[in-house]
Amino acid sequence: MKNLKKNSKGYRGYIFSRKIKGLLIPQKVQNLVIRDYANRKKLFFKLSKVEYSFSGSYIMMKSLIKETKTLDGLIIYSINLLPENKSERKYFLNSFLKQKKKIHFALEEIALDNKNKIREIEDIYFVKENSKVI
Amino acid sequence: MENYFTTEEINTQKSLIKKGYFIFDIKEKKLLNEIRDKTLFHVKDWFKKRKIKLKINTNILNNIHKFISIENLNSLRLHVYNKLNLDRKFHENYFFIGKQYIDILCGNEVSMQKKVNLSIQLPKDDSSLLPVHSDVWQGDSPYELVLWIPLVNCAKTKSMYILPKKINKKFQDKLFKYNSTSKIFDEVKGKVKWLDIKYGQGLIFTQNIMHGNVVNLEKTTRWSFNCRFKSLLSPYSGKTIGDFFSPITIRAATRLGMNYEEPKKK
Image 1 (cartoon, rainbow over the protein chains, first blue to last red):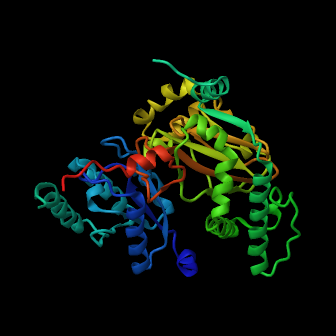
Image 2 (spheres, helix red, strand yellow):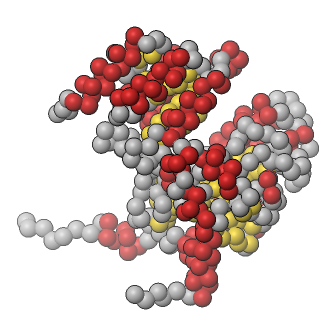
Image 3 (cartoon, rainbow over the protein chains, first blue to last red):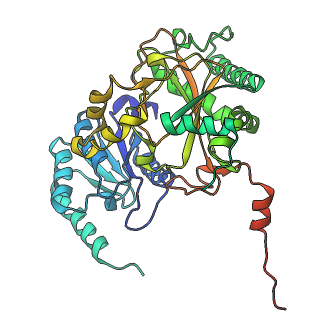
């Protein structure tokens, strides 16, 4: 871990304090998934930002864009945490990619490091939104 | 609706509702000193492991910045935090220090945060700041209260600030306009109330009101604990019973209710 710290600006975690697709996932669990992912991928994890609980709020996510320069990237708990609005979602992802930062989605174990991969994220997001879990 | 409270209960509750916080003199000084002594023991232990001899006295906490760098601070903090939180007596002492007022303000059946947080703020250290926030916005129940206990005298920037309740509403509504709390702080920084709390005093406050800290610009280091309490059966939010809170005072009537069984047809 010490070497990771020395050679890295770090990856900021991002979790929700409100329900995710109808389920309340404890913050502790979201952080455990992120921490486990970071350990396996040897990423230096920096404490997560917690999105506000108000419906539709992405204030913390927007504040991450301002923090980009001081980070190597983000580890978001899941693709499900991305904004529901497609243009907002793309704006957020592009803002990071433009600055050559990586976004990892811990639950899905997907790393986004170029624009072509946005389509993969969008496909998964669409199916998650429109398919039924039985 | 009637309110059958004693005069002390009425005054204590009025203070919290009006200001959002309540400061009290700790009567159980022995328990507080025990917590401080245990903290000092674990501080000494951390330095000893690094082969640094530290002369322990009650003023060492105020002056710890003379012996540790900002890079090593979190290691010391986590060492003390983990050791103290393994100790059930520490939790018990922490509760009993504030029990009289927790009973009045939360109720006499309460759940307690499982791990008591420790904050160490060295002078001029900007690595452990809590910008203006309200914990309720990020998954805490609005029914929780925080018991904040310092191990050193805290005032001005060495302490924490809270927004006066009167202006909190006006400024918290600007959150969506600004999309950031830092702009809110820029507007309110002249209006916040810095809490002056000495060793031997405790603070109980609501997280529904914006609060935070800034870089400690005083000459000595802050050491303070914080721990959330709530009425056992009041609504929980993202931090739930079992994972974050632990029931600590379930009384007989509730136990009887929990174990009640209706007559069964055989």
